[in-house]
Figure 1 (cartoon, rainbow, N blue to C red):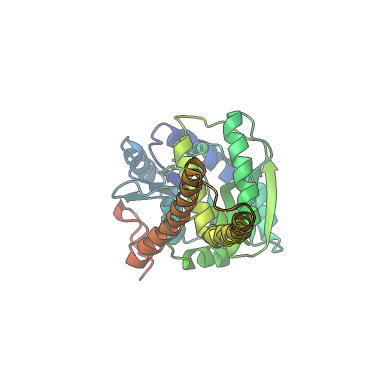
Figure 2: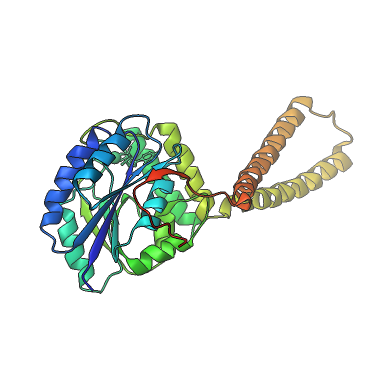
Length: 315
Ligand code: UDP
Ligand code: MG
């Protein structure tokens, strides 16, 4: 059987970027002698992204599109694209040319040798990124790798070429709260890493604000570690020990020097501290509970509004 590569491109308001990306991609793909399919996933864009995709699909029968009923997020778009892909290799790429299509040839040659199931990319530097953001990113990776047994590689991009076997494994994880960086690592398989310098996006603007990134990183931690849940137990134990020591101290003092006047301000401080710790711990449990609640609803990861791919994966 001849090889076929599926390229999956999540797009959210990328109307200006898609044509530029398509040109670069097809030029790079021309160097690779395989069957190709490009799957654009329109993640509920409010611009003309879908129109641009349709125009390309009319010209090129290798272009497929899936359009969501609303914005479901990049994770959902990647899942939909992988689910719709039919190649025995599949790659995920951003529409903004931050993932250089020229690398595909090398990635394909590497995966073809059969020693690896996945050729993944990571950026070697964080050039062009605000310093504060780089700092928090580094902190995040250090933290999550300490408390999670799944390795999350710093600077890993979603740009990766995978074998069908690995794609199917990724698809078998049907969780609603998807954190792909963790999922790719969790399914295992042999991954080869390629590094390249950070490239600034060609058109449009990044869809990530600082608060979005913060929420994303917290979601990542909750998806791949339950360590925060034990914070309450650890703190509880610590405060019990402190309380025991205090009791001994207070009783001894009372026996030797008589009943001292109770310190109101210090008591208030302790009450505030302990209430804070308790609410914080309950908050963490609440976060996990809310994730569990959402998962238990078993909602679909995305909803398609229109597409030119006839075959649904269930068939
Ligand atoms: N994206 C998406 N849905 C979203 C946000 C982003 O499909 O809700 C797509 C976006 O169109 C792009 C890719 O995900 O192709 C990466 O987004 P972006 O370039 O904004 O992220 P960055 O490269 O800055 O991390
Ligand atoms: Mg980008």
